Length: 256
Image 1 (cartoon, helix red, strand yellow):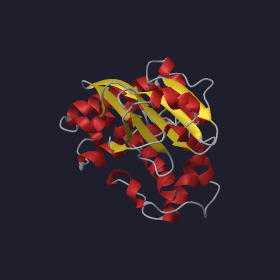
Image 2: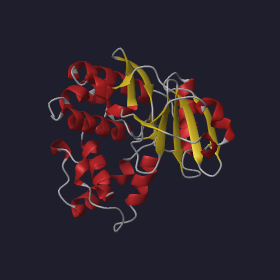
Image 3: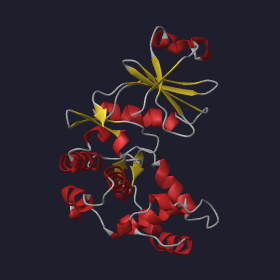
């Protein structure tokens, strides 16, 4: 995770945050085009976004934290903008463990099975799932984004994506708890053991195939090879998912 040291004026932040910022070294650790993330050395991360944008992330971070799966959300403020302050999770994200991909696949598969084994009762639907359902009603919406495709689950055209979506939208479920953006930078390991999930704005009740697709995509993207796709899916358990649904997720993603 990148960290670029920046200068700040404490007066630009709500008074409730001043004790955490006073005297601290602050680094820009943003990865989103919309939200800004600041690392407050050595203990906190502060995410800043437009008003109302961090509400579900704060809710889901609290839910995950109570189950030992995410760092504590210290406070969430909605004033001129939204401010979500969380403790730093111990360890490093999965990008620090690319030198042992077999072990990485094992940890990720075990972690994802554990997450999908939790009851989603009372959770809001994942915002990513909600976006999928909206896309299925708007043929002219979105854009064609080939960067999300993989050879294993290829969708060759916008027309094909639309047809796959329409034929399979009824198969999308919200029967498990999902991360919604299960990529390597969003999973923290401590000594190669799972520590925490971070960046949870898309978490909620959803379809397990969404997490599976993004896990496979992220492994391929960061390892620069598809050699570990089958290994990861085997470790997760082939009996626990429908292979065809991974192409369905690809169709929803490529449609925008």
